[in-house]
Image (cartoon, rainbow, N blue to C red):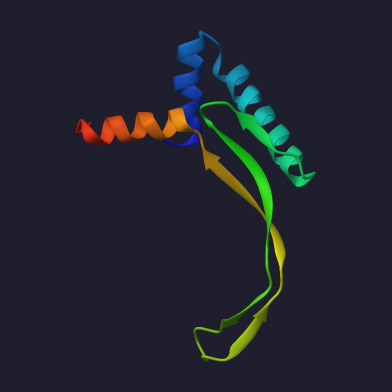
Length: 97
């Protein structure tokens, strides 16, 4: 499902216009991204949570040359699925749908 399909489904589900729904999704995205960028954790109970973690510096390899290179540490966003989300996916997979 792409963003346009999500907008259509959500607009139909909430009896809203596609324009209002797109504005809502864009705002939600922006709020979550800014909160995580500011070091906050955003949690939607049952769905999941967004936060940021620091990846430690490490040595890696240039795949073209095989040369060892240093990869510096950096902060990256992370999403962890909630229990309800995991349970729904597992139930659908086990029922063959």
